[in-house]
Image (cartoon, rainbow, N blue to C red; front, side, top):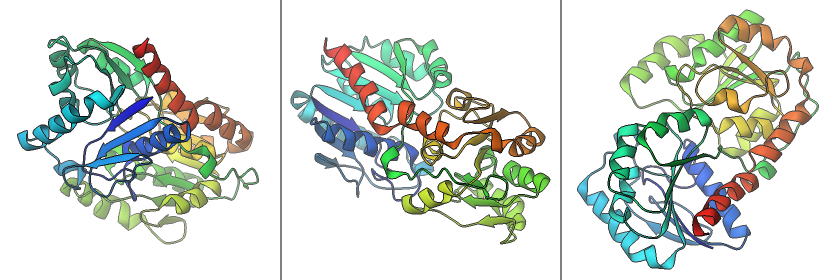
Length: 345
């Protein structure tokens, strides 16, 4: 199959550090190529493709990217040129990129990895768009898009499971806890610190600091003073090798999210290492955790702290199997290919 994958230009595919969406696209593109499909990646500078690569736009802070007519025109020209050479156009970027080809017969997939504004969907559907399937990374996110109309399916985020080392021999009573993610208030690092303090457990925090002023103030005033280099450690941004080592030696990953989290990429990554997750019930996260089997779901810091003492009841092998069966790059690539095939038939 001839597949064109399209992404916003702000962050390269794959990303060096931050960039969950871009990481998933890279994993899927590589898996498609392994399966013998022809892949064209349309993405920002410094991207890498297992097949053809078309670069456009500029890399930038994700928060600073704005759609402009020049960028729209660039994407439109690329799609007009490439449309006859592909069976499917799969867009992981802004919905606006598909507007110029809305009426085209080519099969189109629009994937959402974030909260959806239904009015954008309804606007495109009013144009009587043809051969378009919408996907989102959790049932929770699908529900935010369905009011706009269209055909919707759920396809979860993935991890390249073979690149993560399964560790079955962690001392859950003494191994550190881990928080991995952007250091923004909605991600809940402050709650992870509170849970660690309540239990007297060591917590290792890894992640990037947001360029937004209010988030930098959050880091400086609420997080940084808590870092003591012993019980609460901040190690900065980690690459894939460091992430593998960090997750593999952890008793659990804490995910005390305070927003409607679509479906975090760190979830399948942690499971691939055999690491259970203790998470707040929010957004699509509850769909990814089997309470009492691959982790625990809770609503408060106090509940999170209490579940830390129950980590010995979790079999790390169950977490690894979950990653392999439900969230591997191979599994998710097949899920998307099934959608393409259904469209083509």
